[in-house]
Image (cartoon, rainbow, N blue to C red; front, side):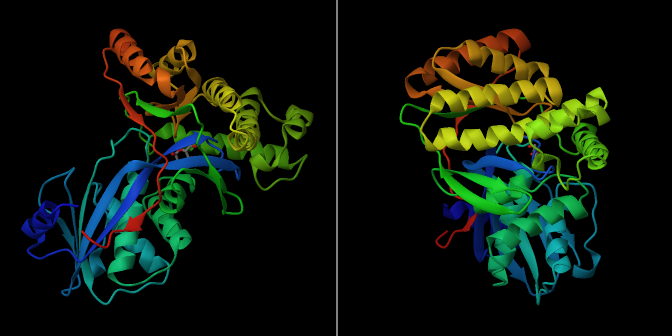
Length: 385
Ligand code: GLA
């Protein structure tokens, strides 16, 4: 980091920052809407993310400033950490989550956020902010709870305190990812395995549709409720704690207890979970063709059975399927907009970017932003800054 951010911190808070933490956004390669159904997900951290600079506040209050929302910092007394409906609710909830987890602070803190992650693009900008905040607070007060607990604190901030009913994928991906690897996360047991994710002739590209994805809007919570209703109905004939612990054959055998909508929601969760396992085998075998086919199948299931895609995203995936050198493409993240992820041969990437940008602008009048997905390490504190 350059000294300019230290100076910017000083201009806002009249003192210098003492710690710096970075947390990345993520792209999910496959395993969508499985994390709240006890299934597998396969995300990776990306290079872009959120930085949090922090200094203690001996007077005990907490102040928050973001370059993305430049106005006066939000300052709250330690005993008045309340939500106001603005961006600062995210870091406020992280502080509250530490308190809920039993941590106590001898001083307050001044926290300054900036980053290079597109907001609302389905790249987990909120998880990156929460995780960067959790790592900065942990470093500032030398709490050292470990990565899994920091991911859980960040998750609890968003879920239990902010009331966004998300699964654990995003915070775990941001906190625990490893360079050049995808993170195979068993969300039921919270177990992690790293899978090397590099093909010799191709790499992943994210295409941002520019359609803003917002988790707190109704669709996401509705899907969760529909999955839970399907699980509860199946529970009567085949007891299960999580939809994704069923096999595809078990679901077929018991589908008579489900109405059409519940069956399609369950079929997505169960088949997607099976696809993650096959995708890991394809990665380990270096088989880009199989991996890509699983991406296309994942997208069809999200579009038709789970109904969380949208016209722009379907257009981008269909276009990718017709473009030379593309092994696979799918929507990534919660859906209803955001990004697609594409597995594209290196020698075809330039032409891919050109044709996607042109066709997308012609059809929707929107600019598609395209980023190479460089599989990156998870959150870290930065010693020299
Ligand atoms: C959002 C949520 C995740 C996960 C995905 C869908 O990104 O935050 O927990 O449920 O949607 O896979």
